[in-house]
Image 1 (cartoon, one colour):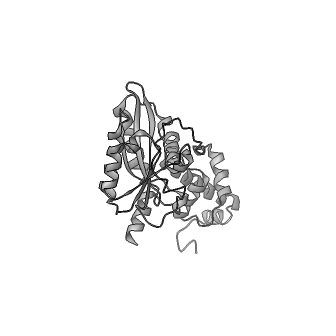
Image 2 (image 1 turned 90 degrees about the horizontal axis):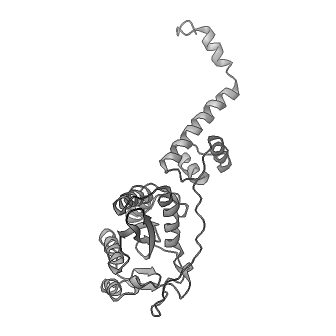
Image 3 (image 1 turned 90 degrees about the vertical axis):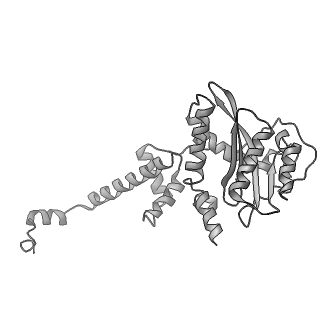
Length: 272
């Protein structure tokens, strides 16, 4: 057969004698290459569970988390660990306003419940800057956000307008926030109520009531803010845009939505 195929007999027998361990070395080498590729594409934030889900998409159907962990250890890589949110609030409290959400973060459709909050981001030249974010609890997508040098009512109004413009939600949407002055201002409440949405506020002294958006900001800090030194406001704005629009919404998979990205899950919901 070797003569017919013009294939060197010695090469043929060498192939037949290839040891099983050599085959496994090749398999493991390819696996490590794929793990490293997925890890780098995730901005070096994915751990073994999410890397395993991405490997399944590449054809590794029966791969275990432990096996992924072993190879990550050999490669010297690990995920950025985000600590669980621990509330620490010193904000002045708005006495009125009902807690409609009441820690019920479950949803049945997109644009049913949004959560909103503000976080602080430091820059070298411009000092503190402020990011207001709105997250859809159904898709985990950041549907609206605004970035500013000042933490005033216009900051949260721009984030709200951004979310409404892109999502076009129906009447009855619940928008939950803490009782900070920006969210309890007459301007903000009027903007929400004019659209016939429903305002919801965290209970007095209970930041856990808004834990989902606080958790997003914790992830943002670990995966983006703490990995950069922002020169000024414009530098921070560009990097935050890249993270939210380029990575978080479009590429970062979430276990709570079947290891899909927020954008992909939203598209699936809209199509069904």
